[in-house]
Structures are given as C-alpha cells and as structure tokens.
Length: 187
Image (cartoon, rainbow, N blue to C red; front, side, top):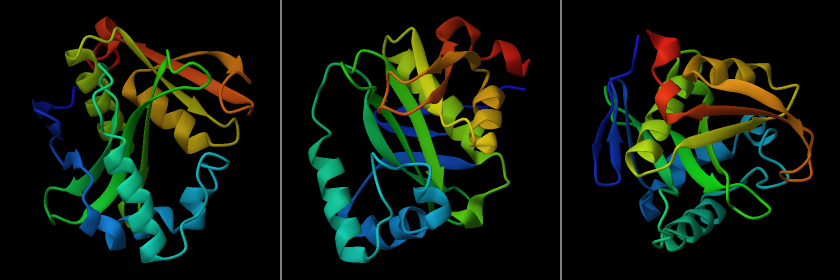
C-alpha cells in the first residue's frame, strides 16, 4: 500500500501528518521531541539532548536561517498530526558529510507519537519530496543497535546497501531508495 503524498511548495501532506517549515513559536512542541533522552541518544554527536525552551528556540532559529536555496531539496520540517494539529515530530533532508553529495532523510517523533507508523509515513513523504525535485536516490543512515530505525527504513522501501564509517565518523547501516523503487515495496 502506498502512502498518499501531496506537495504544495515546501509543505508535504500525507494521510496522517503535515510536514511544514519550522517556526520560532514551535520551541515548546519541539522540546517534547528533542528534550527526550530516548530520541536524543540516536542523534549524538550531531545533536545532543535539548534541555530547555530557550535553547530549543535557538536551534530552531538556526534551522530557519539555514533554509537558503542550495539548489537541492534539502531542509528541515516540523511534523504536525493532522487530526489533533499537535506538533509531534521533525523531518529532514540534509547532505551527508563529508561532501554533502549524498542526501539523507531522517525523522524524529515525540514518544507520544511512537507506534503509529508515522516514521515510515514521514520518510516516504520526504523521499517523494526529494524525487519530485529531481533527486534520483536518498539514503538513511542508522546505528546498528537502532532496530526500530532499521525496521522503519525497510518499511519505507529502502534497501540495505552496507555498513560504513564514512558519515559522522560512526559505524552506520546505510539504506537507500531510488526514485523508481519508492512504491514498489508497498504494492
């Protein structure tokens, strides 16, 4: 089964979620994601746990200022639950280090949103966004102990391509989905 994805500029809407650009007043909702130790542990060293709303505002301000035209479909999105309107997650398409040539899709959710399949829905939507803007493939990198992250990458339709220390100087599992294969695994 394929997720329904609608793209309007930089806003992406699926059956259950809306991905939109971050705003300064999202800090309290974002803290429910990035203030959680169970979320932050998978993000270090790139990002640590955020301890307070003021620091979260600073992080969001930095993300907003980074939303400049790179010529590629990169960026960060706040993820809202369509039913409640509540900010429940974060999604991103970013260039992977060291050169930024490969694009990584990622997503994080507040624990209150876990177990609903929203990670695969967000990942699928972000891949559609990248492909609708000319990209041919996107990657997800997951720490070997992150069983949930590995499972979600496979649910999106990503294939395992190996293990590397190329990105972030960490041992990571690498998954890839190509434009032509995005919906094949969901049919």
